[in-house]
Image 1 (cartoon, rainbow, N blue to C red):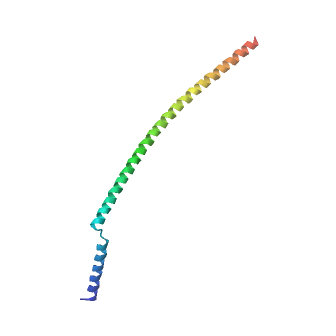
Image 2: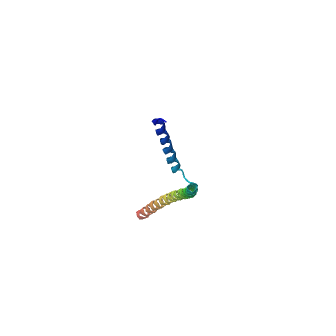
Length: 102
């Protein structure tokens, strides 16, 4: 056998032994599958929690929008009431001026 073939055979044997040593045993494979299943379950639970949080945030946003609309209506009503009060105050002032001129 030539030196190149011997080196190639040794190199192939070395690579195969490293490859086989890196392979998981059946027990290790089962443990990895169990870990993957647990991680998938955790991811699913986290996604469910995130979806619930997004739904709650959407509900809160809707409630806040409703509150803003109510506040805007109250501001309009208050502005109308203030205008009425201002008009009444002016009428009363004119009445007193008219009464004091007599």
